[in-house]
Each structure stands twice: as C-alpha cells, then as structure tokens.
Length: 189
Image (tube, rainbow, N blue to C red; front, side, top):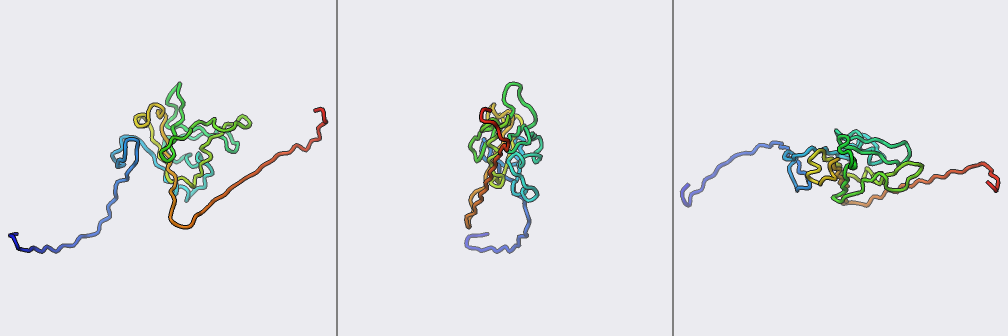
C-alpha cells in the first residue's frame, strides 16, 4: 500500500462457542483453574439445592466432594459432625480442616456452644445452606503451603451469596420445645 492509497478487504467472521477458563481466588492470588498446583473441589450450592434439601452445612457437604468425610457424632438435633479431608493427617494436631467464610477465618471447634446431654454442638450448623453460593475444598500439602501448618488437614472456603437487585426477601424460622414430668413428687424429694 502506497501513501494516500486505500485498501478494502471484506471478510465474514463465523460464530464459534469457546469455553473460558475459570478464575479461582486463592491465598496466592487469582489463577486460572488449569494453572492450579493444588487439589481443589468446588461445590456449586445452587445446583445441589435443585436436587436435595439439606438442613445444615454438614448435610450440604456430605457426599459431594471426593476425599471429604463427614461423620455425625449422634442423632441429636444440632450435634456437631466431624469433618475430615483425606483422613487423619497428624497424630498430635487437630485433624479438622480450617474454615474460611468470605475470606474471614471461622471457628472449626466442634466443642463451641453449650454441651447438652453429653453432645457437642458446632457453629457451622448455624450456617443456612441456602445462603451459601460455593464451597471450595483445598486438599493435601498444598493447603498447608497456602495457609500454613494449621491447614495440614485441609481448608474449606465458603462463599456466601451476595445481594441481588430487586425486592427484599426475608426468611424467619423458629422452634420451641418443652418437656414436663407429670409425676407428683413429695415435697421432700
């Protein structure tokens, strides 16, 4: 093409569907999913809620990620569950994974809360499964590399749903229980 000349090239682009790589937020920053050097499992909660109705966080987690074991401590309502990723990882350290909710570390102590009837409770049961968007589970040595030695048993990252445009929606749930002993006891008993 010489100075002052015009060249016209007509062409047509065809439409082609291309799958983009997923971006994952890790302790080391944003990475494309294929570049991750660690083993992660992701649970898309909205998809899971289409086929099941979990009542607690541990119900939501159970059986949905490879290598994650959720063992209920009893049948008592609100009782804690033991969560292990790839089994026991230490003889002397705690074998429960670290829990992060929206980037903030949460208590993973199964003894938190009142101990009723010899049963332990867990604050994880206070999480509403319908308020969770995704659950990512970081497994193996890479969890300790990203989060420190306390994460040798793995890390569970919970991302909650964000506000959406539209009318506000509220959910309220309550329950009350009581027990009476109908026996007439003597005053000196």
